[in-house]
Amino acid sequence: MSPSSDFEAARIALGQRLRALRRHKGITARALAQECGWHQSKVSRIENGKACPSPADITAWATACGAAQDTEELLSMAEGIERMYVEWRHIERDGLRRAHEETLPLWTRSTGFKGYSQCLIPGLFQTEAYTRAVLQGIQERRALTDDVEGTVQARMERQQVLQDKGKRFAIILEEAALNYRLAGREVMIDQLSRLISVSGFSNVSLGIIPLTADRKGMWPVEDFWIFDDREAHVETVSAFITVKQRGALSLYQDAFSRLHPLAVYGSDAYPLIMKALPGE
Image (cartoon, rainbow, N blue to C red):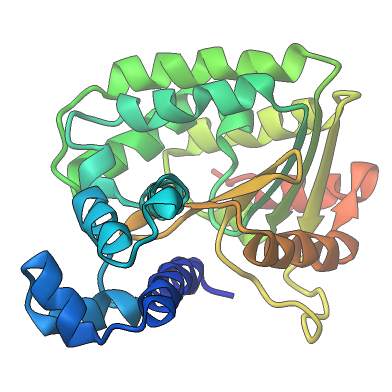
């Protein structure tokens, strides 16, 4: 399962839809390109999912194919693809806080959350110092505007959703996430202690997959969040992915279902957390 392949599939689906309009009209790719004032290769790239058409491209295409009535639907489809895959360099061009603020309404209105992480303690469970260490690392690595302190405070405020008993959080971590030393000893001790505290919340289910778990049926995958079983968010090295397409979303739901029984919960998880506490 690859989030980038989900994006490619959505772009191909749009290209196939546009190709169908052209063929229904009975015109060749060359004729369409001439009508729209394009090079023929542009039609080919769009139809094969190699390029995303602009709103102007879609409008011109639908008009040339006598399908102006389909323009709004096609534009909506293209907009969904554009929102699905957004490179970090665009989201973070003004700093880190924008990426946080754009997703905040979803956290507010959603009631059911499923999260999986193989490398980090999830943001909702982070201490202020751990969050600061994570964000400083991102800011320095990507050479971003330094708005780390403001973003830290915004993330701490988002944690208020944990106090809403009408919301349910099912979180699965790989044991490795407990052991990555992303900050100093005291910060990590406080963070792991925080994890134990949050796991006791009545609306939180925290599972940890031991390093010794039998992984033949399900190996570690990229970190993801699922909101109300309606959309998933995935972070890659280069981009932020939003998955809403039913087929792609079902893959993340299935992944969570397969990961869930591999984890240990409650008091069975505490020894793994205690083992991860850094020594002197």
